[in-house]
Image (cartoon, rainbow, N blue to C red; front, side, top):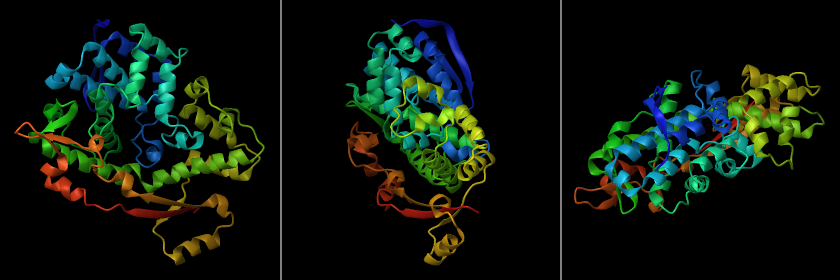
Length: 394
């Protein structure tokens, strides 16, 4: 038996109404310094510079994922019957802590440190010096390892991996609804309640009753539209490019800004350094760079702080690109070309069993979603598109 809180703790949430906490280990993890740090990490990277209300954090999203998993493991009979209490605790902790390793400005941090956020998350969970590790091991000596295994998608009970990471997982369901709400868009809305009511487990696979298929179709289209309309917004990319170019310049000049020294080539960032690195610290560094002797570094710091974004042209003609290049003196820093493929963001793919959403038919048989849905069958025929953009100083 795992210790429970004296009473069920509730946290108000705009997406789920309330977040319910009944286990002490969950409450302890929420109050750990590593989890509290997520208050200071935006959920959407550079999108808060495009959608002015998108100020929500990884903290809120992580609580939302936890709440969906809490409901899945308490309200869906076939899930409840397939796991014991210890396994439930494992997947609840994995849901809560799955984004612990995200750095400032979302995936930008991964790009300049060459480390995946899941790898950092596992390091923090397994490090005996972190508060979150101490919270987990206090509840059960094997809990840190089991949680790490779920995050790495290698837990021996496959359904636990699927709840956290699959085509229809709690992570995606929360971030689509939350990001749509916080950006003020309607692209990401779908019927979460209907999906939760129709989720089942059969043959160790998460699946959806045939009666819930239309809700899943809406979910798939919501994901597709959110990627192209929000997550891949060209102005958000422009902001991230400014940060990328700032650090390119910083690494090339002989100037020291203390908070940015951990980004020097060859420096291995420790867990303690990572925990201290949040967006507040990054903005402090950018403010220090306003007084740099280097004009280019100073300019990029100003652009980042005052939102002086690069202009952009999508799929430019040869003449358009030449016109832009002819008027830019420093092309190394003030001209940037990107190529985005929709291959990674196709609404749905069925390359293998793990990437398939399974439908439980009225005959109690499992079938791939594409065999039951004409809409999804058509979506699978979509071809990947590539969009090229040039970014440049205005």
